[in-house]
Amino acid sequence: MFELHPAFAATSHALGDLALSHARLQGDARFPWIVLIPRVEGAEELEDLAAGERDVLMDEVLQAGLAARAVAEALGRPAPKLNVGQLGNITAQLHVHVIARRPQDPAWPAPVWGFGTAEPYDPATLEIALAAARRVFGL
Image (cartoon, rainbow, N blue to C red; front, side, top):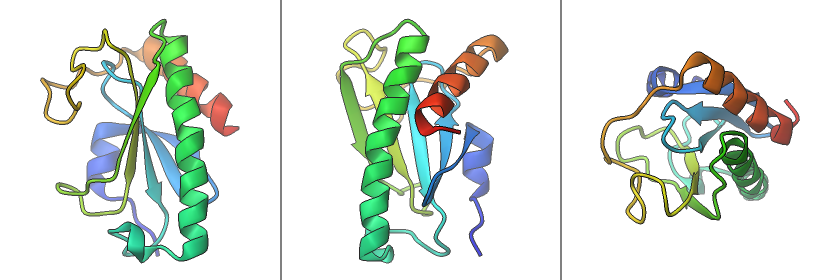
């Protein structure tokens, strides 16, 4: 049975379940950032997914890119670039990061990982961000 690693619950906000993945908004207001966690028990690497599941995940990554850009737009920070990464060095459970980037963001052009300290969303901005992402995902 699939169980979400506690690190995700501690650092992100639930958006809902897609066909394969559980989608979350990373709790760092500096970056419009979606995390997809495939609901596949024991999956740590892409190779742990069946071929059909990998196809679904790629479709969800593309959808998450649209959602991250929608969050950026809703927050008044249009993002022309997407960063997509599947690292798992700290949390081994398979997950994919999809981050909307712009030259004005605080980490540009470097990666966002390990850059400064995460800034939590204020409640009103969080609701705007969650609603924008959920609209794209149809949640």
